[in-house]
Image: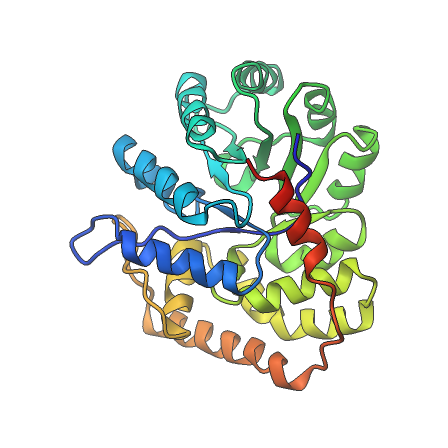
Length: 317
C-alpha cells in the first residue's frame, strides 16, 4: 500500500457558462496546483460539487484527472454516495482507471449508526485493493465516526487514513492513540491545521489550497520540518482566509470566488448554489490579500520540498 502525506487539494470542478464540465479549465487547474507544489489531488470531493454530478460526469472527471495527472502526484478519487452499492461502484471505477485511492464521506441524512457505518466500510474495503481515506465531517453529513469506531475500522485492510473534520482538536491524538497508530490522520479543518499537524496529523486535505497552494504547502512543510516559529507567523497571515473557508458555510462558492480573485477561472458553482454576495466577496478578497502579503512579509527558510513529493510519486499507481 502507498504511504500518503502532505497537502492534498479537494479541487473545484470547473463548469462552463452552459453548466457543462469544462475539461480545458480542469486540466489548467490541475497543472496550476501541481506546479505550485501540492502533494496530491482529490477530484469529486464535496468542494468539487460531487453531489451535483451525474454518473457520466463523475466518470469523465475521474478519468480526465487521472490521465492528465499522469502519475505526477497521487489522486484520491472522491467516491461518496448514500448507498454502499454506489460507493463500491464508484470506488471500483476509480481503481480501474488508475486512481491511487479513494476518499469516502459517510452516508448522510439516513443517519447510520456505528454498527451500520462499520458494516458499510467493511464491505467497501473488501471490494477494492487501493487505500481508503474516510472523511469524517459530522457537520455536513450529520454522522460522526468517533475515535473508537475509527480504531475498529483501522484493522480492516485498505482503511488506513481519515480526514478529520469534527472541529475537535483533541480527536487527532485520540485517533492515533486508540488505533495504536494504524489510522493515519489528515487534517480536514483548514483553520485548525497548525494544531493538527503539531500533534500528529501527517497531511492536510486543504480546500484553501485551491487558491493559495504554495502558501499551504509552505505552512505544511514549516510545521513538519520543525520550523515552528516561522510556521506560526505564516499561519497567522493565512488564518483569516482559512477561517472564511471553514466558517462561511459556502465552501464551493468561496473556493471559486478565490480562484477568480487570483486571476484564474473555473466557472460558476452549479445550482442550487449561487455566486456570493458583494459583501462576502469583499471579505474573501481582503483575506486573500492579507495571506498573499505573507509572500513578502515573512521570511521563508529553505524547505525540503522533494521528500513528500518523491515519496508520493513512488507510491502512485
